[in-house]
Image (cartoon, rainbow, N blue to C red; front, top):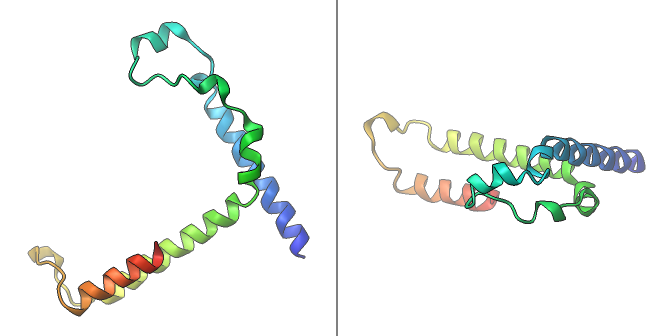
Amino acid sequence: MWLYFLITNALLGILGVEYSFSLLKKYRDGNEQRDSAYQLCRRNDAKNWSRFKFYPGSIFMPLRMCIFIGTFVWMVVSIMIICIGHDFKKGDKITGFRKHAVKFVTVTAC
């Protein structure tokens, strides 16, 4: 079971890297005419990009994305529960116990 999960996770990560590289084709083409007009935004290292260098990190990318989304949802729901009864429309700052609870949830999530 775990082997299938890891293989599926790795394949999804590699597909994500391949899809990302297909979207970046116009930035890796080395169009000097276009790039000379935008010297400050030019990527001089685009010719060195290699998709194979991204494969080791892409193996656990889908799992990391799921963990990130879960953590973000947990943080938002926790802060919404903590701030029940606080009127943000007045422009009041969060103070007291709520401030410390929101800080704790944020630090824990980060």
